[in-house]
Length: 311
Image 1 (cartoon, helix red, strand yellow):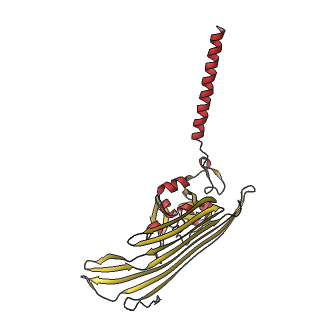
Image 2 (cartoon, helix red, strand yellow):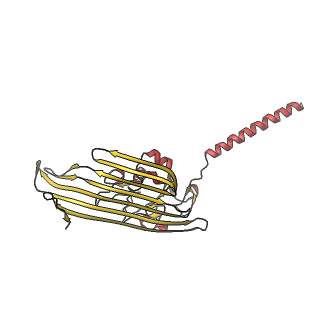
Image 3 (cartoon, one colour):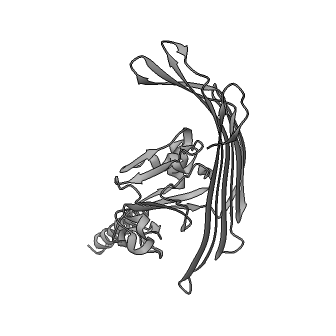
């Protein structure tokens, strides 16, 4: 009788230990510990944040096949977007932007907490996905924390502080050619690329028997992005894009050109610079940012191709 009780106790104890181990493993698989900083300006668990927050992590970004931060964000629920080329490209004075929940002038975009908006235009084409650790999206009014540009929501692009990757890329097509170089290591991320835009004819019907012809030709764009973290508390970000765009415009009627038309040249430069000091132990954070964009348009007749200031 005693042997039977002893055997039963041993079997029961073994089953309890096995069940406890299996239960612990299941808990580890479903641990919800995603940390976000954008909704409250301080690090908190996603489940404890009183806002509609979604986080796109590095693995999801890689699997998306996107090339720029703009391409990642435009595919999210609740966004409308406006771009003039792949990856969120701007073209001369034509600006790119994303709008959250349909509120124009209400979506604030930041890089590591530093705003990059300029008069509501939040171009992100110069930020390659290889440099992004995660993207936090807070839907709904955040004006109390971030000001008037955040009435629809906030996007915070958080870059990688450490990496071990170097890649060279080349692309070619009928209308676009591109090369790029990316490198990341301990405390730094650097990305440079250049686009060559070939000739593109576009026809837009103006009246029933009159058509305006647009042609893009011999344009190019330079992109550079640098993120440095010399210490755990201090980081610097720099994004630069510079485009040289040519566009021709002339009117056709019944298939015949009615005039010499006009040629336009745009020199477009955008710079976003920021420095962030974040001391989490003492709950102190300060951000200094500088954003600038200069668009210089020129105009001439198609016959001479001698460009002068646009009057």
